[in-house]
Length: 437
Ligand SMILES: [Zn+2]
Image (cartoon, rainbow, N blue to C red; front, side):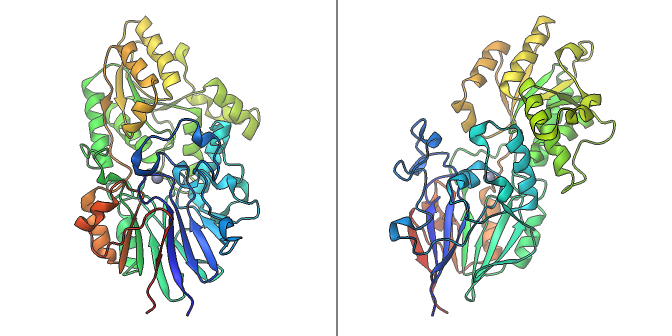
């Protein structure tokens, strides 16, 4: 009988950099090949390491089975979602290696490839093979089906694999408190008792407070600030977190404020509308667009010299600000935020700072502290995690009811047994052989 097994190449004791190999006899496929965010156990990575990934410095993994002379060379790589800690290393794969991604995640990455710095771009993107969530496809002996998940990356999917009569379900990154929380019910009704569940556990450490339990709570908290305070509001948040942009959009609409985004975010929303027509912008709404010079250059290169003019009706810059009505909310990079704050200071207006992403990023970038000094104020934290909190992980795992649950994407694999049934903890590089039925 052909043996089926799961090798956890990375993700046993880290958040980010996930990589899982599913083996069936001599065939295999790999789920995710992400850039690590941290070293094993959560320590900071040696600076500069991720700029020159290699097998020697431990950033690249022996995903091709080189050490065993290409025994078990994978048939394909399947990417769960468009976050660099899940796809960031795919440019290091052999050029003929098929890489799969969901249609909507592909669209998100296409826009990223236009506006990101060169080191963040994925050169292989045009050759990616696109899968549709809900439609199964075959790779060798593997039948693969992706399910849309509720996560802070648009188009994020879980991956269900059937091979040799066995079933393996990888959650990817997900949560149960965002704008697409309902999709979890769909997943739970279709994925039942897999042989193996690979489930993320990002929030089980202390770095993910649930002060705001849901995306809706975040929107309401934004609204409170927008109503109380008449100062311009500057929001630091992931430019590609579509759920969060929608929260800001809704809160601005409810409070009568103007939401100012940049050209990159406008292109992203405009592109993703083909997957989710309800997304902003909508005709004559309250979105205005700032065109940073570098983004104009990127847009010209990718879409032609004139394409960005179609957004010019919404254009705003410092000269066009209406200082009689300061009810603006800006979602920019810190560099642009600084310039706009200085413009408001010149007219003796204050600025309100809202921090709306994972707290870990604050420590990595000194510009956050600089903006506090500039405004003589503190960032107000309004954020909910892109990852499921414990109560949701528990109900999800309970309903899926896998025969074996393997923790991934977590610093707290050792605490899984306290919360979930049938846990098998793998170390990085370890393989779990599925028992023959
Ligand atoms: Zn993610």
